[in-house]
Image (tube, rainbow, N blue to C red; front, side, top):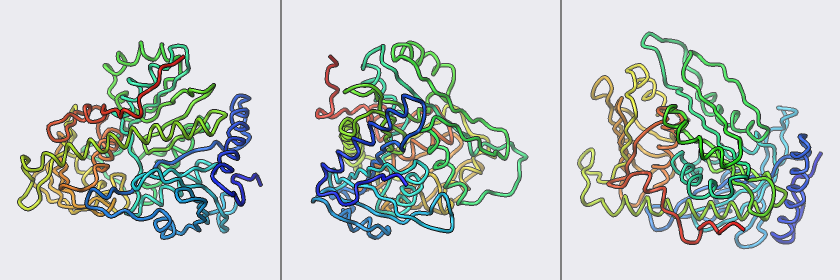
Length: 431
């Protein structure tokens, strides 16, 4: 069996050197169009900040509660060992190893060379717990990364954009069939996303015909720039940007960034990969800080959905209203046990296509009030709660409900929120 992690590293730099060797071997395999070793990949995870209502926990405590054997390497870097199902024999388990780096009290990076499906399933279980969530690189944020960074890395460099929208709630008015299980619903994304590293597409059995768009643009950056805005004008799913490739600054290849904060290394350098992950972390942290500052600073002037909970709303308007059947299925599925929106609540019906939900976000179990209609959604979080919820809602609405939307956080447009670029993450000039 191939060794995917150093057995007893003395320091983090031994881990870096090991991942550098695997990255070089994996890149050679990619160039020869054959798989030699799994690609190095990072999962950027969000916890909680002390300036809000939450209380940060040490990462060792979080991951021990998730079943990990934690072996500290230094004060911010540790080895995590989990028992996972053996893909070759489902009746047995085997150990998988990855490494966790704590960037600050709120953000962690998990580095692993495990197969995509195994790693993705493991992380998906972690974020079902309230302490952790994905970092949600919504379509507007990925678009800003393209506009302000990737599109300026050289017109002759190779770029790649992936758009994905599936109207999973779309139903004809007379449709009826048995419902799928919550486990199937929760695992669909893991199965699909895991194939992206190998450039595959998993075909899914659908109950009915409905819109399902998966479109890739892999070309020279200059050609993509000249075509993208025109294509988006005529085809709404091209507003649902799901992944993009950031070309390497140090050589050939690049780094694939997905909406749920997974970054896959397709270069020959782990150093380049880690620098890219930290760059994305600084951008996301600055945008999340601005989201919360915008929401919390307007609390006193904002009307709440009901007396007793005040907060600034996230307002989302759809490009076209949902049918009544689609709206009903959305309301039904959005609050089941393991849902894509990570929400809990009991919808109160106020009309054929209008509900109120006085519920909670499963991330940290913070309160959230929602108003859902066929034309859009309003979400209100009280002061001090996690702004990551806003980014998760926008991400999943565009992917599963309507690909083209307009959104505001209080008086700020969501586009303005995601364009807050931190000074320490500015893109350096290309040589």
